[in-house]
Length: 303
Length: 303
Image 1 (cartoon, helix red, strand yellow):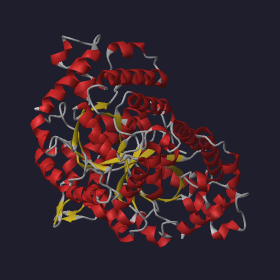
Image 2 (image 1 turned 180 degrees about the horizontal axis):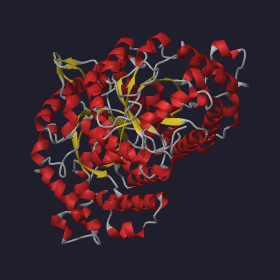
Image 3 (image 1 turned 60 degrees about the vertical axis):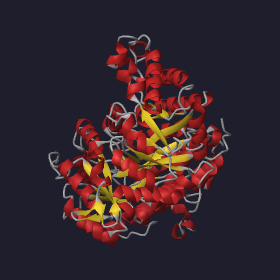
Image 4 (image 1 turned 120 degrees about the horizontal axis):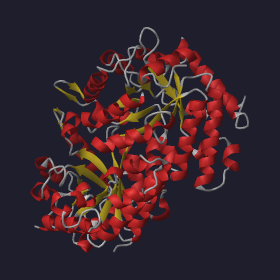
């Protein structure tokens, strides 16, 4: 493990190396899909559901902490439960850190100036450095460079990172992202912004604090974007449930096997409901299904 | 007042007509800028600051409730205080409703599928219909149509609205938004999406649940976008502190004086610090400065 005071890009490189894994486990607690034991025991109130989310995430973290470098809680599912959910999110992040995991909060925040700085202050910086204490936050770029810079400045002072949405995994993402002008597409313009922001911020690993989100569902663009953003960690969603394969994500890595992490949420955290694991584990041994699915994905990505 | 069960577009039209005002007061509680009495009395903890934010917003709401139709809390400043801040946000929204104001939450949320639906469920729908209970939410469009639709579906079931970022007021907004392909610019593509989403959803006022954010700092584009989105309420930021004038926003309105609301945050809520009000009111009578600034803006926009 590296010191918490090392830069984000270097800490992530160290964590990937230490764990020998490029898997990011997405913590997307959807109440209706929780294992039946947790669902049945939860009181029918926001507090009750928030407690179930906390327990579900804690048990996942216990299983995956030795196997992967990083988890990615999805803010939306916690926020759905109101302020109680936001407390469960803070508890989950703290628990993940206690177990030696890095945390990327998927909140897709975005705003300008002092408002962006307020979001950065809320979420970025492990330990007591922010209210929620995540190592990194996903950020949406529609507002332009002056919406990204306040986040990057907070990354500088808190050894944190951001992942800017560049080319997302969903079918509708192209409507804006693929629009092409004389000097290239929208997503290429965002990729250039990512590279510019990292320019004076490279760590000893060669990676800076500003990462990018590029979907596994677009392998050609992933290869192209790897070249365009040589200093950016790439967070790759869309593996598994959304259809991306190990071959699809291969182009995201540098020649040392660094530079990308591959997220999987549903196929890991709800593995007990997958046909291949349902019979062996099912609801009652859902934690073992999580472990089997995580090990399976680690293996798939080692090839 | 209209029934809470009327569609969002119609409720906003009624509120603007009833209050004879198109002003939206932005609730952006920055701790360092609070009137000194509130700042000095706040305990130096997230709870203490959250209590100060609640009180500040309540007192503003007391002053502006008879004068304007709608307030717009900025989620970032509440979130900066952690879970306690998110409770203060919920209290503020509830208090605004109790005083007869509509509430647009400025959270710029965005995601796809069931994740977008979770955000919509968290924030959209007054009363007990959601955890935070706002009438509308700002939404960022980088992810495309499949990121907007889940929000619109929740609008349908909860008589709520969204405001999609189209052409924002900040200098850097053009980097993505103004990029022009053969079939038009990015912001025009987003405007077309807004119009499409409203198509089967027009209320008796002629306005649908899907609004748009267009900055006062781009008056030409505002005029063009008014034509391109005839069924969309336009939320216009950038008036006052950011430089937009009454002449700049005129093109946002239809011929009945509806179809747009003009936001002002800093110049109203921190009016006690403005040179023109500082001497008459100052910190001690900051509420009267808020009232004077609100009345002044109402007058400017009536011309």
